[in-house]
Image 1 (spheres, rainbow, N blue to C red):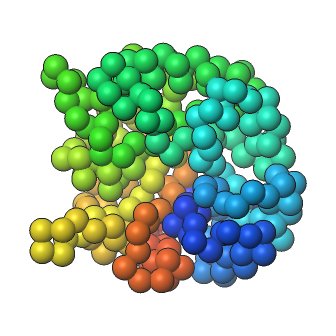
Image 2 (cartoon, rainbow, N blue to C red):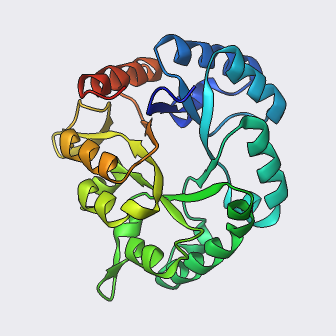
Amino acid sequence: MESSVIGAQLYTLRDFLKTPEDIRTSLARVSQMGYETVQTSALCPIDPAELRKLTDDHQLQIVATHIGFDDIRNEPQRVIDEHEIWGCRHVAIGGMPGEYRSEDGFHRFATAASEAARPLIDAGLTFSYHNHSFELESFDGRTGLQILAEESDPDTFSFEVDTYWIQHGGGNPVTWLEKLKDRMHIVHFKDLAMKGSEQLFAEVGEGNLEWIPIIEACKAAKIEWYLVEQDRCQQDPFDALALSLKNLRGYGLP
């Protein structure tokens, strides 16, 4: 497939993925709105082969996943085998485990994740870390995200930059896309809107992020997949995904 760079992050639809039949129905709707690729996240327990059949049935390709860090650390071969079933190369975790969320933890996680990801890399997969905004807390002049970038192994540790969360933490998405350009395969697209002084998740193009420079930075970094995610939606999540796709196409993306 691989005819589109835009994909849907299924975490957006997590309330509609609670049974295998929910997954079937939701994948059908995602395909009908024009998506060709998805990132799996927050699905109910489902046999890997059954999930592959469901995505194939709806002409969808799994191009990335979000899984638990303990799965990678404790059962790397199972992770490798499942991704082979799905035909998926990109493995990511959705956030840092709580045990590492401290100044010392950033240093420890950079080392631990670099080592844990090695079997995946040796098997031809990639490992990416998805940021939120807490990684932009500064410790002695360096943010947690800087610590991860500078102290992890670039051969095994990649990044899945999330545009909303970078902005939420006071950073500039373009700056971080440029800083990490040699260590990224996938990126999360979501917008940030304001309601009074409250920050809201928004559909791409419906908030205040500057999408033209963001997209140009992604192209310069040779990002493979632009994955649309919205943690909380102000409207029906399916409609939110559809609007983001429409707006991204308006920016000229296939």
